[in-house]
Structure formats: C-alpha cells, structure tokens
Image (cartoon, rainbow, N blue to C red; front, side, top):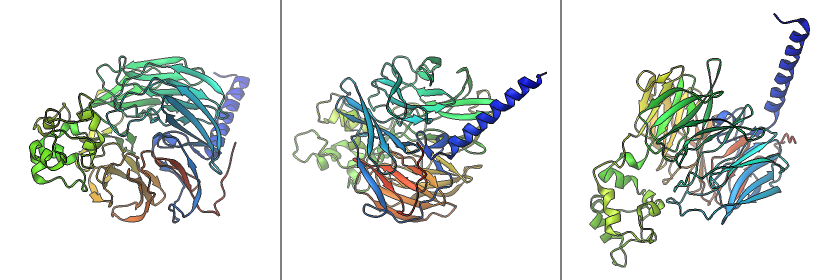
Length: 503
C-alpha cells in the first residue's frame, strides 16, 4: 500500500508525463518514415488547394542525391544525402527551406548497386524533438541534437546490400530499432537512444537483405516490434527482444513495411523471384517499352529487336524502359556493362527464382508462436506493391503497384472495393501512399503526384507533374506538403496558411 507522499509523487510524475506528451503532440511533426507511428496518416490535415511547379510553392530547396524522406519537428526538417563517398546529414528551416546546418561522414566507396534505386542515403532520419537519429548502412548510427551537435555515434558493420539499404530507424520511448537483415550477423537491433548502448539484439539467421522498416505496435500490456523479411513477419517483445509470434508465407525478397488496421497487421508484397516465364518478362517492361510478343517469348527475338548494332550483346542504352533496365547491373553478372545471351536467357525460365509467393496477408494480433495458419484473417494476390507500403485508413487498405495500379480493400475482410485501377502513369511507385483528409496522396517515380479520393469509388481528384523523379515518401504537416524529388525538397501550401513554428 502506497503512503500519501509516495502516492502524491506518483501522481505528480504521471501529470508531468501527460503534460509532456500533450506538448509533444502539439508540436508540428512528422518524426520518422511514414510519419507518426509509421502509419502514413496526416491526421487533421488537408491538401484542398491547387499546387504545381509554379503554383502554391512556398519554397523549393536544392538537395544532394539521396532517397530519404523528410523528417520534421517544429521548424526543423531533417534529411540525408550523398556526394561520392561523403554522406550528408542535413537540417533545413521549415519556414523557408534555408539550410541551418549540415554534417558529413566519410564512407568507403559505395558498391556498384544492382538497381537504379540504390543509394547510401535511403534511410529516413527519426526524431523525438530532443535527438535526431541518422543511419547509413555503410557507416552506422549518428545521433545529433536539433542544433547539429553530436550526442553519440556507433559504427556498425555493413550488411553488404547490393541493392543498397532501405529500412529506416524507428525511435520509440527512448529506444532505437534497426532492421539489420542480411550481412554476416543479421538481426533486429535495439539501442538506448540516450547513449547508443545495445539493449538487445534478436538474431535473424538466414535472412537476406530487406527493406522493411520496423513497426512498433501495442499488444496486451506492452509493445511488440514487427520485423519483416525473407518470407516471414516476426513480432518481438519491445523490452526483451524475445520473439512473441511469427508468420510465414510471404515473398522472400520484400520491400513494403507492415501496418496495423483495427483488426490485424497487413504485410506482404510482390517480387520477380516468384514469377516465371512470360509473366516474368512482362513484369520487366512497362507500357512504353514496345517489346514485341515474340520478344516476350524468346530471348533470341528480344536480341533481334533491341540489339541495335547487332554485336551480340545488349547495353543499358539499348534496353527498353522498365524494371529490367533498372536492374541491369543485377542481370549483368560479370559487370562488364553488356548482357550476352547466357546472362539474358535465364530470365525466360519457367522456374521461379526462389521459394515463396507473392501475397498480402492480414495477420490477427494476440497470438503466440507460429500463427501462419491460425491467425490469417485474409489474403490477396492481385495488385500487390513492389516497394510502396500498404496504407490503412478509415476501414480500408490501399495498395499502389508498379505500372500505376491502385487498389482499395475492406480492412476487415480483404474484399476489394476496387482493384488495379489505372492512375494513368506507368513505371515504378517507390513512395508509400499517405492519407490526407479526404484524399490518398500517391507519387509516381516518373514525377507525377496524385490525389485520389478516399472511399469505395475510384476517382483521381488531381494530378500534378513535377518533371523530377520521386523516390521518397512525402510528409504533410499543417496542411503543407513536403515532397522530395530527384534534386529538390518542395514545400507546397497556400500563402495564407500560418505555420505554428516551434523551436
């Protein structure tokens, strides 16, 4: 039984914690990849205004190369970039895009990535307003305060990801979670955000490289951290790192990150590893490729169509647009810049490249052990995303697939409200969709931005063409859109909108 002084102290501490939480929530923020909670929902926001290259542009700031998404707190925007062997830690002022500070670290020469999306600066920073967590797979973790002062850093061995590292750090209750799949010692790493000390590491033997950002979920009286990759999704106890439950049946190589609905965890995706023959070839080219039906069936016919100078090899310039061209370095096994028939012909094989299947599953929470059979609420196999994470919003799940296909599912049953509707722009969709009021914000790699109406009927409300490629997931704070394109960070907002600028 508590004494009166102890009880009063406990109540005071609770009140102070509640007040601190309320103050934090009132500060404009988009604190990590996919925003608050990693859910890609801009609560209470709206983009009900026209915007474009010359319309309602608050500012446009030049950026170095890099694919990390904007991370915001108060009047600060945190990003990363890369210039040769220098990775950059960048802070911009939210009111006008001015660079407040920049720090650098030197890395070894980046490996020649096997895909055009590869970059040492893929991981999005995370912040809680007191510290900013930057992560580079080629270097390690660097934690600065909002003024750019070093708090601590921890070098980590690289995972040697030939596609580059895509998962972002997650900062939750003074803990940093890092997906370290692939490499010599794969696992989920938990660090103390205050000093970088290892709190625990959950080994994940046999996992190949993954792009899945961890996802923190309340379960029972505590929290679990979800880590997906190599065909499985595992929930680890946030305090101890002990595996609580585990589900299989997913793609072996997977890019999307999980998300929670009111009923379940939605996770899955699509990869070329699980298709074969003509289906694989068709998936490698978009509608602008003009690959003939004969070239889809026969590697000899493909060479005949695209080997322009008839020298018996294909260069990247001769390849038609599409995923195959983007992954030219992966197909070019000897890295000589040319594809001969022995490198190209295996793509026509009728055998899948790896075990597993392309699927999106809804896994009910609350289980223990292997829940692959017992807790699957529903599954879907059409309209699956390659990179963009699923979005749960207002009782629906939204998916964006390569080629510009948009799908809306009932979150409880998985039944489609509409499926594989065309947005109108093909190619890849690397950015994850974001919910903003009555719209779903979708970005195509080719530089088009869509606002799609929420609900059961497919309707594109607005399309904007920026003319610069887009890899990064956008952020929306105080009715202002922060969008990173190939060379800039854009801030779109109405001129009469007042920003609540906190330090």
